[in-house]
Image 1: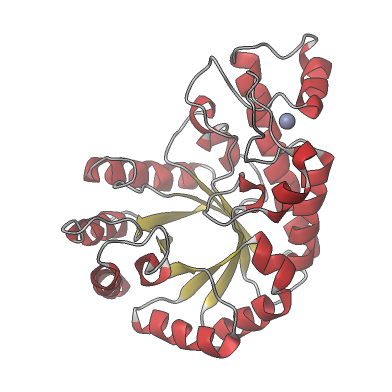
Image 2 (image 1 turned 90 degrees about the vertical axis):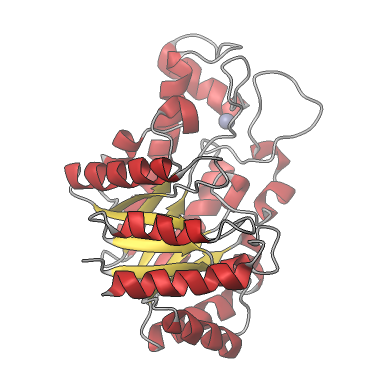
Amino acid sequence: MVKELGVAYYGFHFPDRAGEDFLEMMEHNCNAVLLAVSEYDYQVWYSNVITIAQKAKELGLKVYVNLWAFGKVFGGEAPSVFLQDNVNYRQVLSKEIPFPLVGACFNTEGFRKYFFDAVSKLAGEKVFDGFFWDEPHYIITGSREIYSCVCPKCRELFREKYGYDMPPKANEDVFEFKEESILDFLRQASKLVKKVDPQKSVTVCLMPFYTAEEQGVSWEKVCSIKEIDVFGTDPYWSVARKDMDFVSQASRETVEIAKKYGKKSQLWIQGFLIPAGKEEEVREAGRIIGNTDVDSIFTWAYRACEGSMVQSENPKKVWSIIKEVYAELKE
Ligand SMILES: [Zn+2]
């Protein structure tokens, strides 16, 4: 029996208008919402972020917070104020390139303080039921020939641990080092949530790649973090140019691994960038996911991202299919 059905929600700024959107989500059979809070929202609209979360809560939704695209090392389209203000804490590639990378380094004191301060502040807000770590990853180059990150802090830590300088091409030590860096970051952030408010849950969503070489950190290692309560993935078949077998496999494996480590599981349905004519795939994916023993199902995002750069070609159609799929899953 599926306990939780939700959507991600972003671009909100006024509680009364957001309240109307929450009612629409509930009409679409949602009982939970993930507020995607960008650095801009966090820095400029903090007060309304909290009143909007309270509005969702009053209406009966579970409310989760996602530090959306923070430092551009968490998933999402939102820009990063941190990167704009802190060129020195950006990731550095192993080959020299004439422009700075768009991604903060997990190991730099500057980014750690920035992120952990935000976690600490938001964790103090009673309204949130939990936190969501969204696709934490290093910049993916897809090659061992060139990799990130070899910033001064990473070089210093790597030398301390392995006794030699970071190599020009990635080797097993580099993969292990990067994996440990992400794990340490997630462990610290999750511990902080529990320290401030032990009632809050911590969810992590990794991309549907299984190894450290592919996304910086492996599923197994992330699941071994004690403070993480829910493990999930987002098998967005259409953007990955894959079919429903991909959705089936990722869903099955997510539920299995979550159970193995005593966690709850979460799966995401692609509601964005659905090409015209392919809308029924959303229903198919929803059914596949619904047929697993998963605890929580979410869709990215509200109204199939209508009007945004990642909107589906027929967002209204996709959004109404999500309503129908959720009605089936509710029963
Ligand atoms: Zn670095």
